[in-house]
Image (cartoon, rainbow, N blue to C red; front, top):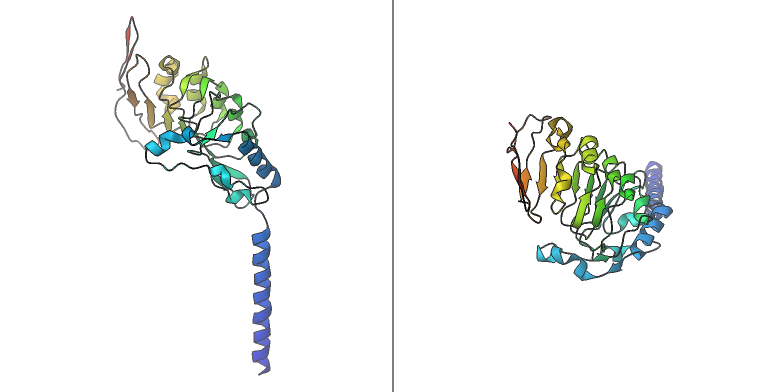
Length: 268
């Protein structure tokens, strides 16, 4: 009888300990205060306009204002579009695609205060002719960057070539965008892990340096798309992936202008 009583008391005390530990872990916020504050400042820098993400709905993708769930006092790791490292609490992913965001991303935006970001998706918003500024070059851990169809404009900062861990880069669907002089050369030379590169709408003349034909600097790239722009034809490139010894289609393209036709020969 005494053994049974002791076992019951031990079970009761263990249950209370587990319960208190669970309550403590639930009341502890994973997200560091400074990160939450930076996100709230980012939220305040935009207005919400559902027309900013009209292309999502027209393509059957549900759009909604993700930042509406960003509330002061709650754990930012539970906010829509935010992914945290569950050990460190660092924000490693921001998916703000189709979020009805309207406004300019300035060079001092708190967007650039997340050095541990691995994935950043800003697609299908309206950033009102913002530039792909040097701030994007700070994300040294970034593997996926997608600012497509979000009304970025102007020169693409050469600092984007600092993102040496990028696996996927989608710059398509923006207005009057082109690489800074030698910018694409630097991108090709430095982003050796790149597997997917989408440049639809980028000025064709800025993406045909000699380095594009240098297969040794593109050993990981398996897909490059450049859509029709002005007098240029639609082009799709598929590169050999030497790491897996696989082959795709050969590359052939034609670029036209008012007084000339330029053909880039296929690869053997």
